[in-house]
Image (cartoon, rainbow, N blue to C red):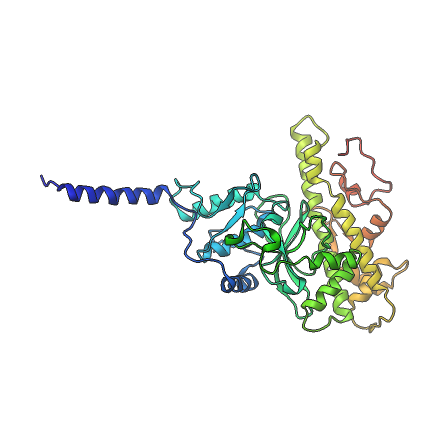
Amino acid sequence: MTRLCPIKLLLLSIITFFILASHSQAAVWETKNQWNDVWEKHYQNWVKFYWTADKFMDSRQPNYYLIPHDCADAVYLMRLIFAYENKLPFVIKNPNKRSTLISNSMNKWDKTKDPTKRLRQFIRYLNGVVGTKSIPYDTYPIALSELKPGDIYVAPGTHSYQITDITETGVPVIMSSTTPLGPKFLAKLTSFPFFVPEHKKQLDGYRRFIQPQNIKKPIDKQPKYSNEQFVIAAEKQYNFIYFTDVMAKKLGKRPETREEKSERLINALCSFAKERTNYVSSAIFYMENIRNNTKRSCMDANEYDYYSTPSRDKRLKRFFEEVRNIAFTKGAKTDPSVWSALRVAQAIYQPQPNARNLSDLEYFCQIPLIEDSRETISLRQLWLNLARGLVSSDPNAPLDARWGNAKTVYKSSCPSY
């Protein structure tokens, strides 16, 4: 039998130790590069060309295929996936204890040898702890003229968007996910997020991710930090149209024409109204589940808070009002023989709209009352229902009351929270 000399035995032991250690101390991915201005530009280009609406629905990308997500998850995953693919660090503050960090160097998943599975486990863990309320602590506000692909908009506790491009007229291309959590296509729209920065502590607005080496620095010490957007929003009295007009001038290479602006606004209005279908559907389906599988007939306080839509419905009504102001500004002229976004917008509000304009409006946008249903409501009817106070934000309400199609204001027998 061959015997190994003591020195060879020692070397073998050392090699074995490091082999075992490498398997037992496995980071989610190995960091080989560091964030700097060059990598930020690579990130901006990657978001513009490769961050697509089917990112989580493309079976050719097994690392991300069918990953469940909501709006905040998608914001974080945009940054995480680029960091993963380019061996950059991904570091954020732990929302449950902000003195600690969540990063790709965590060895929480040491036992998972498959790198793809380890990545997906990390993502699943991340999605379980982050939310729109955590985004402000991992990002910082920037000057409006600085806005680039890869930046984000967040309204804490409400919604968040990814900025993927800027048009030549200075309008952002935005993408977003929605609740409830699940695998889905991202929604893509050329529009300003329908929010104006207004948080008293400046935790909302247009923001940029903090680089890992700066994660512990104060927000106002981050590169190119600016509170400009909050100052402008206050000066414009938080009027969405006036605020976004300033943004467009700062970001655009040319002015937006009247018709372009009308088309952008009417498209955005249709998209925001259709977005409501997701929220209403999830509440209706959840309510059915409660009634079929429990003895309850009403949502509890936590469920009510999650599925009710008062702030969203208030913003939707305000958007209708903003579009109305633009649609009837003096001096607008259009060719009656050509389809016009301006006339389509006017057809929402006129007491007796032109028959052709009304037909164009109804063809242009029909909002499903519930997912996978052919039953729809037009923008005009939704506006009338909102203006009459018939649209209910109560998640316990039946479908007709949620859209204001009931003849009277909905009065619930369930408690409101």
